[in-house]
Amino acid sequence: MAKVLVSDPIDQVGVEILSQVAQVDVKTGLPPEELVKIIPEYDAMMLRSGTRVTKEIIEAATQLKIIGRAGVGVDNIDVQAATRQGIVVVNSPEGNTIAAAEHALAMMLSLSRHIPEANQSVKNDKWERKRFIGAEVYKKTLGVVGLGKIGSHVANVAKSMGMKLLAYDPFISKERADQLGCTLVDLDLLFAESDYITLHIPKTKETTHIINKESLSKMKPNARIINCARGGTIDESALAEAIAEGKIAGAALDVFEEEPLKESKLREHENIILTPHLGASTAEAQVNVAVDVAEQIRDVLLGLPARSAVNIPGLTPDVMEKMRPYLQLAETLGNLVGQLAGGRIERLTVRLQGELASTKGQPIVVASIKGLLSQALRERVNYVNAAIEAKERGIRIIETHDASIRDYSDSLHLAAQGSLGEHSVTGALLSDGEIRITDVDGFPINVPPSNYMLFTVHRDMPGIIGKIGSLLGSFNVNIASMQVGRKIVRGDAVMALSLDDPLPEGLLNEITKVDGIRDAYTVKL
Ligand SMILES: NC(=O)c1ccc[n+]([C@@H]2O[C@H](COP(=O)([O-])OP(=O)(O)OC[C@H]3O[C@@H](n4cnc5c(N)ncnc54)[C@H](O)[C@@H]3O)[C@@H](O)[C@H]2O)c1
Ligand SMILES: O=C(O)[C@H](O)COP(=O)(O)O
Image (cartoon, rainbow, N blue to C red):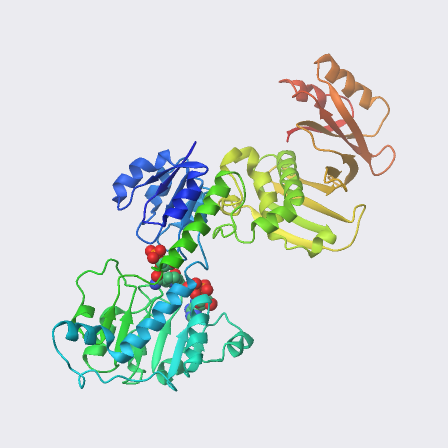
């Protein structure tokens, strides 16, 4: 039975789903060295932001097939290392959207009305009504940085509270911003005009310290900042300083450069509200993310695709289901052309032909690469790491689309340029989904792929087919089917044989010695 390690607290419903297919061990708060020690036993891992899945842990994870993040952010996982090792990383992109948005809104209102301090004051037996004069958000300007799922929900609610909305998100269209009632502006204008600034961005190179000493100096003295997105997007010491000097009015932070928060000046100011990364911590969100991710882990352990894999973009279950026959075709052709080309492959061209040309090529390209590398890497190559493995081997991938119809309404053409020369193959699907190899090196044929195949390039002359047949017979190799493709009579031709048995050692060499044979290749599909 498969084994799943749950290394952060998740809702019990997730554990129940995983238990349908696996032994589930819930071991939270393990130090990294302990994780490195135990991870080789596990097929899957499920976590939240509390576990750092480092390169060392991934390299020790020899059985691991999937890492499930019960939440959105995967910045605590070395996704690159996982991808290289063919481990799928999945998350729950929407399970905690509402929880995080509501936390940001709660932070904004708490800041405006001094709720945490007022609460503390009453609990300390005081009644300080004058001390806690607040500010209304009605008719104030909210600057939303990052207008994705959470930013959009915050904008929607803020609009209904009568706020004016500015937004900065270089990847969002004006139409989308208009729909949400937001005016898209540049960052400097957003900083200068906003009374409240809320961050809903991932931490990237561009967003690291997007709020810093300089941007803080552009803000209004009454500006209040909310960060329920990611630590590191704000320069915390610059923020503490700006608030201490009265340059801005306050901040509410749920996420920090280092978590848990260590010694920090942020703790010193009354008008800074701090929560311990609680954005996703609602009962509802925890059920949503646990179900979403546990189901994906269960599916992957059952050999099914995951719906939100962050490192197999575009290969959702829908796409996999619809494209399955074409992915199989691409893998078969990739495997075939890789073996025909032999040696070191330098370039793979994938051409989607006929009606297939209108399809998104990426899944087919990935499947072609997987097939191409399968002889060298066996089960180590999968949809997750195929592209990265090709890149690391210096294989240039070219994807082209050609809508002109040939013999089949749609077909796939692969050409591999290698250290030993260039070879190409074309294949198509019959109406029942069966694969046909329809062309090898420009010679038309029509053969189904089979486990053991022999391809020869020879002079089209009498007797040659008989000689090959007798030679195979003398080695007790049974021919299941045979086809010859030629362009002109008595010119060059290609022979494709499907064999019931593998070629015995030395036979290929004998075949190449037959008069008229130019080349011979054995292939195992
Ligand atoms: N505090 C929490 O507990 C909690 C909970 C959930 C999500 N989050 C975090 O909130 C953030 C937003 O999550 P989401 O689900 O809305 O993600 P999302 O992907 O839907 O939205 C992110 C938006 O940021 C935009 N963006 C990217 N780079 C940008 C840049 N340089 N400048 C401006 N905008 C940029 C993107 O275009 C996108 O629209 C993530 O970092 C996520 O990890 C935190
Ligand atoms: O990225 C996320 O989903 C949030 O940061 C939530 O993190 P958590 O699952 O550790 O609460």
